[in-house]
Length: 293
Image 1 (cartoon, helix red, strand yellow):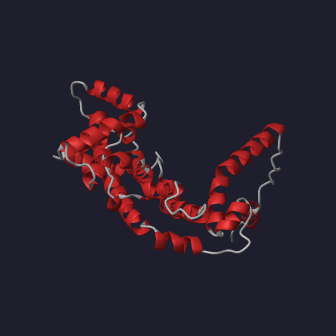
Image 2: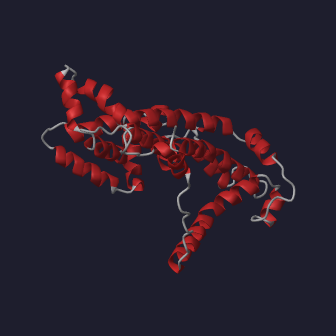
Image 3: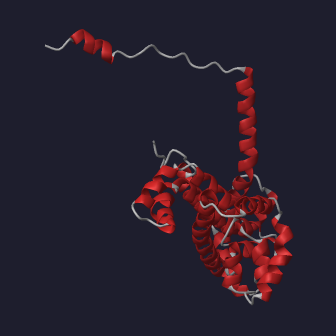
């Protein structure tokens, strides 16, 4: 017959924990955190609520909720602009740039982390130096190179210069260095070459870094503007960032058009926000794919 006393003791709840007392320091940190959150979220609130207002209501009461909710701004956006073409161009560029960065950044990061070749440290130092250069400084050289190669005003001119990212290479290199070398040594003993080891063994273990590169690359290419300004001029190659910028500068004329402009900004934000919230738990979780020796 089972010991009823032992069962009772095992099921008895432990002593209740006292709630943590709020100290002045924790209260101050909480207040600062709430203030930062309000400052950060206020522009999103303004964009969302004004996208569902009339032009007059948005101009008179930009911070208040709409007196009458209306989706007329979204209808005007799709009817009076080339928003569909802008979206298609942004999707094409973002998909190809993201795939390219995943592949090339991973290859470069693996080479810098594992391959021993002359000048490896110099290459890495140059990579770090490139990360410190403001992107605006490279706009004119980019235009000259793209124009000289005959890629100006084409998808290739918009995509190819963005296929490799110094920050992505840096992230992949650091993650590959955290993977035990013994895993690759076992693969080489089994007869796998360098690329096969990278592609079939090491890259699947670097899933958190790959997810991070995917989100950052998609976000960067989706929100890119200066590069598209110097690489294309045809209306048929306008991306969302260029199109929304033209709306903000008064391309529709006839009034302030705040609801239409903010509706465009709101719709443009949705894909990046969805991608981030879907994959946020997988971003740079170093415990994933870890190997215990």
